[in-house]
Length: 65
Image 1 (cartoon, helix red, strand yellow):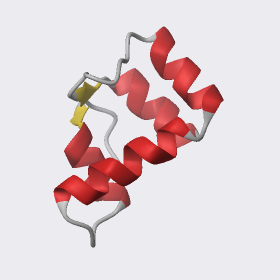
Image 2 (cartoon, one colour; image 1 turned 120 degrees about the vertical axis):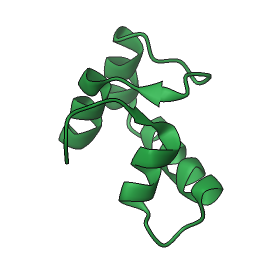
Image 3 (cartoon, rainbow, N blue to C red; image 1 turned 180 degrees about the vertical axis):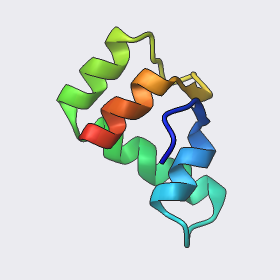
């Protein structure tokens, strides 16, 4: 996977390819919420629940966890 900016939907569909875009996004966000260390790292990079896109740094954290 390229380290670039991804919309939440794009990244979610890579993790959950058989789900609809809305369901995949919900699954990804639920998964992120269940990992406090990941959520803390994302928040430190400016991530908020209303953000529509993940930066390359945020994507690298998601891939790590």
